[in-house]
Length: 288
Image (cartoon, rainbow, N blue to C red):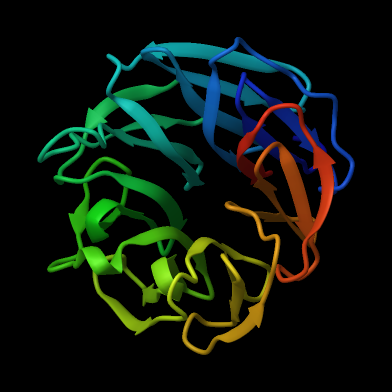
């Protein structure tokens, strides 16, 4: 990708891009019912994955204008829910969250976002949904408190004795550690994805929906509050309003979606301004 871009993707196959998070391209649309639920950037590409009917749908671009799309059967249950990039590879996370007892989690792998290797079943009872890469490993968080680490995206080691109350919603890597965030201001730290420490919580209902590493600090954005930390240990809290439900950081700014089709932008992760209104809802954002 010659110029860095933000991607916003969502309902009806919606994809639009921006160089600065403020000025957005004309939307590209797919079919009615196509929904992109996750997005990631890496290797000069932006990738979005979602579903249409009983299938997983994939879209990749190197310039924000020309897209390569493909479809893979999901048997109406084996849907991809998360996407990350690390070690030169896109890693898609999926499973069947509606299954009773076991979600049958799986992964797809790709070097370019166009050709995908999978699905590969991975160990574990519950799904992992968000993933970050650092310290030569992927670290993922998911349902019922599941936290796991993998050197290659295929073999996973779970954190032992997790509790559902400590379910993490998102994870990011920076300053040599991973930080996971979740319900009621929950924050946890790990270097290896297996041993997690420094559990901290916030106010009741102060759910942290997203965490990113922003140049020199972690920024965790949630309902009513943003937490900022240089190391995942010492945090400063700031009250916020109008924050998005997911966040991408790039070009010195934070970007995220709000219902319905609204895109908001922030210089600090605390004060958010609406910058765009799309005709269809945005589910995911990414930067590359």
